Length: 232
Ligand code: DX5
Ligand code: ZN
Image 1 (cartoon, rainbow, N blue to C red):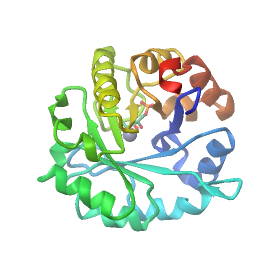
Image 2: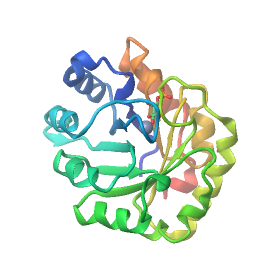
Image 3: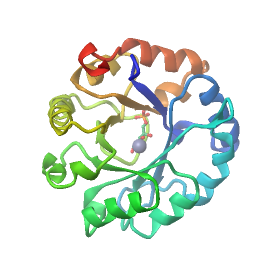
């Protein structure tokens, strides 16, 4: 396992007029995943990008001839019709919010049936009971540390105990489920998120708001070494 958390730069804060170049630049700078935020002006008040843009960046998501995973975060309702489109467009992971699906278990199965990793996203006020009967079929839990819809918001400290709870549940499950945290992450608070149990950190403004992407990614990653217990 990595000694440091995976870093997933969020393209929401990238220069959309040069998206392919931005993707290549953050991969060159050390990004482990490319976080792709999909907003529908319905589940969240903002509107962003869809499967055509995911497909357009796919050829740019390469390092040393190997694909860098695209981590699609659906902030859209309903979700099921979008899932085959993003699978076709090259998503490696698709995460959705339980409130946005009529049948959460069916949506998880749909994602995995297409050969894509499935994630469930919980907002700051969304209770953990959504995990009770699907954790065994998830590849990733994504905990929001801001309310979804916008980049550049402030990390909500109240999410830290929630990260600890989910870490305990994942460890008890014995399965390799990633625990990703999204929203307001920077080099100053990454350590607290990782200490609480996160192994994957999304960072939008903290990466793209810095002229030196390599330094920005390194600052977040190096601020937050994973605890030894989780490196076994
Ligand atoms: C918020 C998005 C996040 C956001 C992160 O709704 O899901 O991925 O882009 O951006 P920062 O790191 O700036 O909070
Ligand atoms: Zn996101």
